[in-house]
Image 1 (cartoon, rainbow, N blue to C red):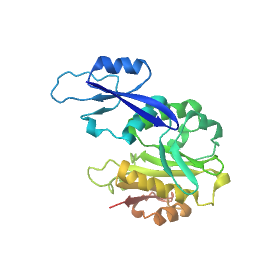
Image 2 (cartoon, one colour):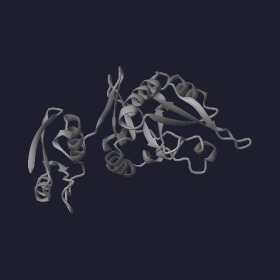
Image 3 (cartoon, helix red, strand yellow):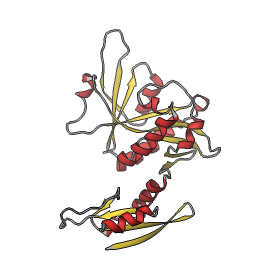
Image 4 (cartoon, rainbow, N blue to C red):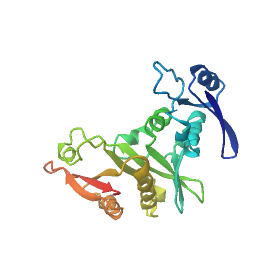
Length: 249
């Protein structure tokens, strides 16, 4: 069976094809339409390619889900949240021209230093995980003022922090970077607060943050957001690394 759904996004009308038939999905995809596979548990060897999204019943579909499918197909950014002063959305390739090359701790910072690596990040990170580092757009001016979001937490080689993670937890961490011309305006707290609210329902109820012990500003921000210190590294004279945890429950 095949169904067609019409959806309006930002004033443009898009067609979505939902089907349990491979040929119908393949034909619609070849024509540039977004597609959703309808999985039948009773059928063996069901081929739902090239659908990147699959549901078991039409009841699993809603406008938000279909909008996400369309945006992925069209390369349109997903809007995460709007605050009083900021729009938080996925990065688009055109943002690279407005990214300052400022030093930033962590491997994720390297992604934003090269145009091609940013394109690859957009293409793969958002589509696979449905979360990542997002652009912070000042609503009044439309300027890119920083980035913030949720990343997978890699604690390899940091055993003191690793042992503090809950059993069976797939840890993710909050990170943010406000560009130097826009600091001391409260954008970090405003963005992170909205991201935590979003992440609690869309990503994980438990979020971590790693902060260097001497970074009093970031530690104060984390504590103000409701994070609590659960572990720190101790490596002689080197500055310690603190692990904070936020839990919405």
